[in-house]
Amino acid sequence: MICLLSDTLFTLDHLLFKLDLSYRTTLGDEQLQKLCVVLKSNSSLCTLKLQYTKITDAGTEYLANVLKSNTTLSTLDLKGNKITEKGIKVLCGALSYNSSLKSLNVSNNQINDTGMLYLNDVMQNCSLEKLNISGNPVSASFIQSLLTSDDSLPGLQKSLTYCQSTYEVSKCLTKDKFFLLPSRSSSVDLSFGEVNDSNVKLLSNAIKVNSTLTSLILRGNTIGPYGTKAICDSLSINKSVKSLDLGANEIGDEGISELAKILPLNSSIESISLQSNRITDAGADQLIQALKTATCITHINLMLNPISQAKINELDEIARQNMRPSKMLTGIFSNSVPMVGS
Image (cartoon, rainbow, N blue to C red):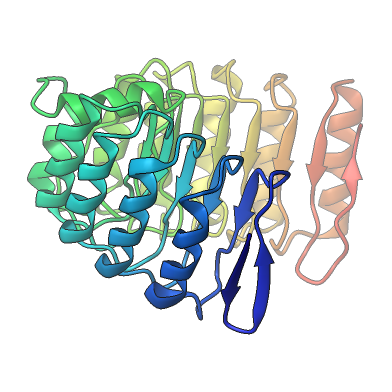
């Protein structure tokens, strides 16, 4: 079977289990229609990835027709397209007839509260087990309903449970919005969002009462010393977080002083990323003192900080003295990245 997409020929045969056309911006609805003609009669394809391919609500009509008849497709990735509540309604109608699809990614589209309600309804009566809805323009009240345990959105709350206890939230933490972590979260990714010193207290309060969170990713925000203190306050109570990523923020030496206070008292944190945070030798000194007793730390990323080679050598020596399998990444700006310990 052959499908013509732009100037390229794609052959779908009985040996093809995965097709990834992500980032083909020339795909669009018209070429998707041609692809779906082929897919309707394909009996081997299990994974179809169409991230950022300019699919709109019109394209969901073609995909819905495939889902109604296809019995092998188990993963459909539509991240980063232009699908609204109208397209989601069409897809949900098809999901009612489909028993093979287990994973659907509709993150970073244009789905509002109404579209999410369609997903909530169909999730209660379909085969989906994993659903990614992050990065859509939903309201603060919707987020509150989703992340509380009042069973107002049982379909979507079911997907959080089945999503391997992982839920990604993107750009939903502003000072005007309510925020809680799902009770079963093991990983929360708020990288490159809107987390700052003004609103991080909301996140800090949520961390304090969460006992399943093991990974917290806050890379690429504008967290400064005050925000770092709020996070550290929560980590003095939370004993489940093992990995903390604060890379590309504005922590500085003042923020490092707060982190250095809690590291010796927290026995769960194993990995910390502090890349590109304006940390100087003064901050490195505080880390060195903390690491002498914080023996659970096995990985620190200090790349792209103006730390002298002398302090890097001291950090290196701390890793060796403690006889632990540390990987301390301490490259500075244009320097290479040495791995200390193995």
